[in-house]
Length: 373
Ligand SMILES: Cc1ncc(COP(=O)(O)O)c(C=O)c1O
Image (cartoon, rainbow, N blue to C red; front, side, top):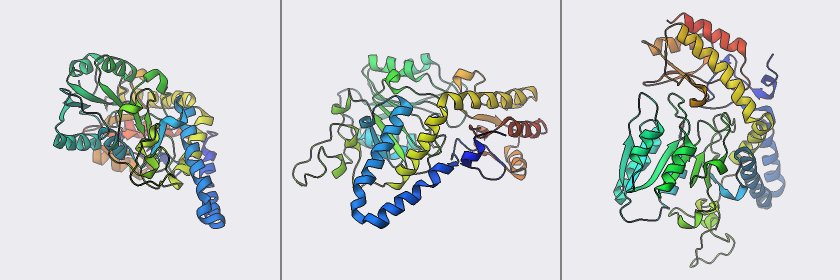
């Protein structure tokens, strides 16, 4: 049996929804009790420890992603982090374009669209049959661009963009860069230093198994002083405990993107899960995931099914998307077998194995796939 199964609470059946919500690690479930005990015994004096826990969340991310803890700022979710970043950009004459791709998560288009009210123009890069070549990106990264939004791994088909190369090219044109790692963090090794983007945003809910509410924003120390968020609060201040209403000064770290009194428990929970993922090792998770997804892809291809995910391992994240003529019907048949998957319009069914899934489960899925060719 897969030795990691005992370390997580796994719903009964075959759980392949890790692109949506990762399963709860057993060690993480205990953290909630510590949080309540601290509150029970110390009331408001628990704040010192609570703030320390949030700081530890940043430290855990720093070791996972090769960053430093002060470059991380806790956020409720990615959507809100992106809004804060956009509203912090310095206005630069004749740079009115914001670039996204048509395969980014819908929230991103919704937020960027709002920016047209402030005079920006949104440009959406069309895909090349579900992928984007570096050449395609370069075509759009023109000198009138203010910022480019790059999704590392696409939510629908798991295509992986060449982030480092896009960032490098964009920077040469003086374009600000913002990377979304929602679908890659925890399953694809990431080195923030090597990318050297201006911003990276992510959440803990998916492959990190850290639950909802623990998003984060990473801001490059080299660039931070140029960005002045509109959405601030006392925790964005250089010294939150100064209490002078007439004197706001931005924190000189990523914490300028923080806001008012922070929530605590999502970060306590997520920190413990991130430690677990760090302990297992993302390289190991990636290797295991690729072995299982390769099995699914080869089964699907051998049975003439439509694989929406890139076949080439370095070009794909942790999910396999397979489309069918009648996806709803196929989805129902998987559900009846207690196989946890979901469906996205245009992409078909999404299958995402984590470290706690094993070959036996994937064989079961493959057998069912064969009946739908
Ligand atoms: C690639 C990607 N970006 C962003 C989001 C949305 O993030 P949030 O709900 O934290 O705003 C998702 C959600 O699935 C996603 O897959």
